[in-house]
Image (cartoon, rainbow, N blue to C red; front, side, top):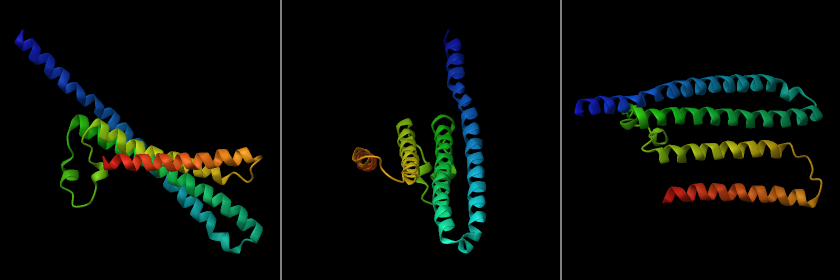
Amino acid sequence: MKALERIFESLLWNSRFVVIFAVIACLFASFGIFYMTTVDAWSMLSHLISYASLDEASRLSERGTAITHVVEIIDGYLLATVLLIFSLGLYELFISKIEQAQHSEHSMKVLVIDSLDDLKARLAKVILMILIVRFFELALNIHSFQSGLDMVYFSGSVALIGLALYLSHAGEKH
């Protein structure tokens, strides 16, 4: 009976290696999003070469478009970063500690994950930043408010974002 228990526990313990599929999938998805976002950034920059030769009205239109593209690029890189952190975190929690990260002379503490709560906290901060960038992108497209109540809603949204940032950083101190 003891031998059967040992075999079962060994099988159960080694089943954690199934997480490697999620690690690899998230890593490749991260690389894919980094690639797509870099192509988008390069495309945007190549379109801006002729910016100086445009007339003032065209520049104003191009500026708004460029700012929207920059926000989308930031959003893409943040999403790729979430996937990378998630991939590294899953690996460290379920498979093995990454020795290079432990002994690195670079300040890579954001990539060293000690617990599931640590991983969730790091992901939550990056996801919060993605939401803030998305809100900023939407705010850029607001050209006028229909009523005073719209302005109050917008101001309340900005205040709630500030509160979310404050609370996320206040949690770090504890």
